[in-house]
Image (tube, rainbow, N blue to C red; front, side, top):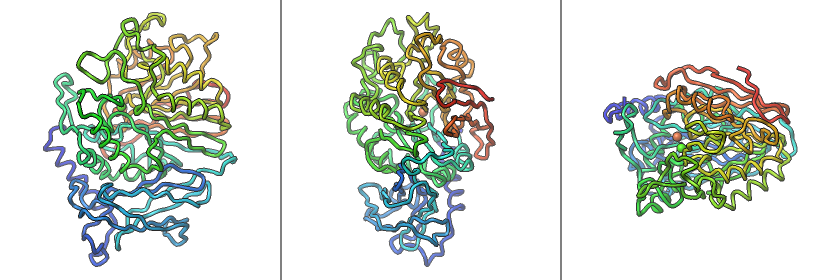
Length: 515
Ligand code: FE
Ligand code: CA
């Protein structure tokens, strides 16, 4: 399954399946510029406001061949309608797909009505894109009965099929939050022999990153999830390089700044985004305020890196003073102040912190009464003083709920100011955290994960042996979270079941397990 030849075969099979699913277009109706159907990567929408939505597409007839579109700008038309048949058009316009942006377009459609479902499509010549469904955020001040949110992350192409995305589409969520690792910068590597793992096809250039997005976006199930609802997106490390910080990749590449900028450009070419600042607030009426964070772009360099290497490691607190150094930051000063302000001013019933990586403490050895412990330096455990400041910022907010990805594990956790102590005397639960597993990316053995749960008082539940996504139903009086797990990630038709479910009641931080 992981050697290059079978990967190519499987890729070809996926593209063939996609072509079969694409709408039939009579030959005479195709674009005069190119005979080939240009919307093979589907469409997407995101960043919903009460009166606006961002629409995305990219023209590329062959997802595996960047040269399949001529290097000239093309003018597209777009339409937003009240109905799927486009009989009642609400807005329309044109947009230019330029080769400088890989023929991608982002359209910020304004003047829409709040809290409404819409359908949208693009046209080039007589070629018509697939139709996407999207919605605007509810009117400010309104209190929706319910928000259904799907939460996903980590979709390494080579580690399985995107059946989870098909199930996301079938769940018909109001909104999808994707919390990072939309692509991985490298190809397949051996899971059986991680020590001898060799990175294959690692991306460094703009062309390489673009090729990865095109490959991933060729997947019909991923497209279906985009076509079902608007997305809120943020990135993690693999959109650029494993465990990078703003100035360093693992390899300490001398031209890392160039690599990073190429990766950032490719990201913005492939996501429905209004601005290139990823940390943003989105309000869902009075029901929820989303604080979407960027824990990657502004962070301090990892603590206690080995000589001659960038990236992360696992270190004992007693051997790495930097872990607790208050000058180090996960968000950067500006974003940290912005978040504290946004929490303070929020009048929402629920404050959803949508961000990349596990916030709960996860020592890899018994933490010895909080005095020591061994911590992975890429996650919040590597930025412990910054995490304590965030706990203080969340303390006054109504119902803070943290959503996380990155660690390829379902975790349910309770967050306290002192994460080593489970007793509530002077150390109450401040926020509840739900960490999604991965769409496909592999994880550690479950026995190890259970040890982490047993050793760390904040972690109440952990499962790393299943892939899938999270489904949150948010109501004024409670949040109901379901951990949705695939039967088999290698099966594109895999079934799905609820592995565990939890509720959080309005006004009471902490978990109640319902399954
Ligand atoms: Fe990942
Ligand atoms: Ca990651």
